[in-house]
Amino acid sequence: MSPEDLLSLLRGFALRTKASTVDLRQFIASLPKGQMTPAEMGAALSGLAKKGALRLSAAEGKIRAVSFPDISEVALQEEYKRLAVEPDLPFPSLDTLPVKVATDEFATVDVKGDFTTLLDDDESPRKGIVKVEFPDGVRSLIVPRVIAGSVLIEAAAAKIARYLQDPKNATYAESKLGSVLRGNELVLRQALEDATSRPRKAATLILSPSDFQFRFWNHLTNLILQDARGKEAKTDVDHGLCQSAFIIAYTVFHMKGASQRDQEKAADLKKLDSAVRRPPYVFGYQDFYDMKDEKGTAFAAKHSRDFIHTFLKEKTQRSGDEDLPPLVRVHAVSQNKDYFIQRDFLVTVFLKKLTEGSEELRGRYMNE
Image 1 (cartoon, helix red, strand yellow):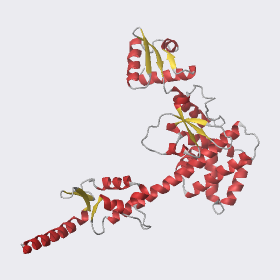
Image 2 (tube, helix red, strand yellow; image 1 turned 90 degrees about the vertical axis):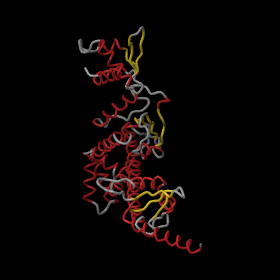
Image 3 (tube, one colour; image 1 turned 180 degrees about the horizontal axis):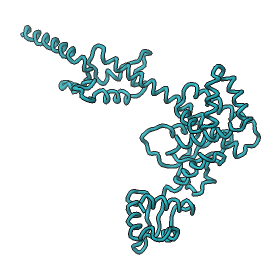
Image 4 (cartoon, one colour; image 1 turned 120 degrees about the vertical axis):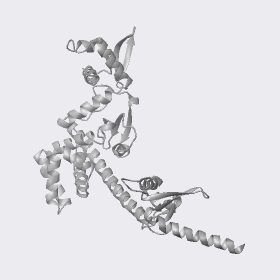
């Protein structure tokens, strides 16, 4: 048995016993005889502990127990895997999670506020558990941070699919959406078919929405929430549906904005690339910080100075068999400053500076 297989069995045992600490003797008793010698298990457990996959507790020189600090997170991920195939199940909450979560193990976010920060693909740590709170008396849920921008969206889409699989709901949604999305009948029919029968595809479209997908999900989720607000008492199904509608509504809004920002950055990078091909051909850092778009907004103010730094880093690196990078960095010793010249204008700049230098030397010589 490999250490990875042993780790999987240990985690499964911890989940079944609903405990973060596993008594090693009980675990061994649950295994078929002869799978692993005590020496092999000891070596495998020590290796897993060094990797941080688990923690060991020993007594009298022997390993007695194994603990999983992240077992609650693992249990949650298992719950979300079940949700993908059984959308009628409720979203996990602090009250329903098989392995209890301590209050200091999770952060709380509002779906209308910081929830969308969980969707950003940054380099920050993705570990931990998040409690997501909702308005209108809708129950909160908990989710591992690492799956907030993927499996959670799939689970929400699956619940919307189950709602649309009711013929009455499907007819109602198609009628309402048809009036607000008039002129897009064929695309609407396809979107409804995906949302009803292909929730995974729907989740992909939610995370990367076109203009139509943005409008479709915005109107559909609003329709569901308006319908729920008219009910005096919400059932478990209503709570799950509202949670899903809120999650999808704010996700599609955030991702559409992110897509537009990415497109704007790409367009502005092209504008910078064009600007360095125009006089004066020589640019320092401050020159780049001061460069503006056609509306008079500085690119550095619009995107941050990191936007400029990323552009310069990319353009000052050679690729393939290039002799020179697109932008050549030149250090002015007398000023202790770096300047950047587009490689196609190196000769032009060199000749200009040579002429200026010659005239200056001639002037000094004549004055003497």
